[in-house]
Each structure stands twice: as structure tokens, then as C-alpha cells.
Amino acid sequence: MNFADANIVTSTGDLSTVAVGDEITITETGRIAHITAIETGTSTYTLTLDTDIGTAGDVVQGVFENWQKVNDNYTSSDGEYKKLGGFATNTWIQFKVLMVGDIELRQFISKGNSKTEL
Image (cartoon, rainbow, N blue to C red; front, side):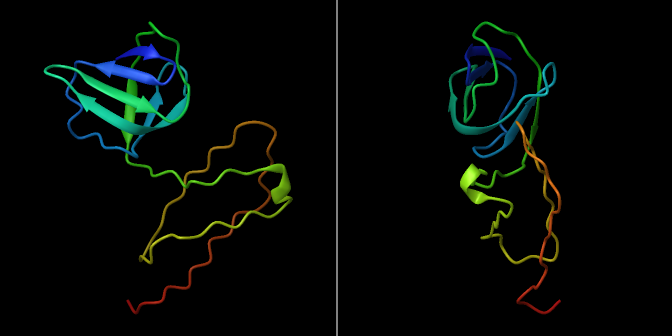
């Protein structure tokens, strides 16, 4: 894969299983972003990312996973408590927490009160 810009990746490999919203991790740097758009050409895939994680001209390898990003960022006005919601009712859920900057995680609570019978 090649970075065409800081947040645009092109590839001639088969990326037909990759979808908008999926996560890409650049293996050389460990940087993570989510795909916001996919354009396909005759032999090229162009992925637009939600975060600048590269430099134009860099040739990289990446790992794609279907982690979905919660569209909420921690801000200084949140204080010591951040509440997230809107997750679908399910028998299980898995979280991946990525913290960048001066952030301390003291506790993570997932309240499991399913509204359906198992």
C-alpha cells in the first residue's frame, strides 16, 4: 500500500472484503485509523481515512479489522466521568480502548442489563 496523502492510501491488492468503518493498523508504526470512504478503479483501491497517520509517498503494510469506532471523543469538559451509549442489545460485546495523549483510565464499567431474554 502507498500513502497518496497523510490520510489517503492506495493499493493494487484485493481489498474487496474491506468496508467503510473498518479499522486499519499500519504495521510499521502501529498507527490506527478508520476508513471513511473507498473508491475502486480498474486495478486500484483508494481508501480515505479519518485520521492523518502517514506521509505521502510512504510504502506500508496494514492490517484490516472490523472494529467500529464510537463517535465520541474525551474532552477536558468531561471531567473524570465519560458515559457512552447507543450500543445494540446483544449477548456479548467487546471493547478496544485507544488512548492517545495524557489520559489515565481508572475504571471501565460495562453495565450489562440486557432487555431481552436469553
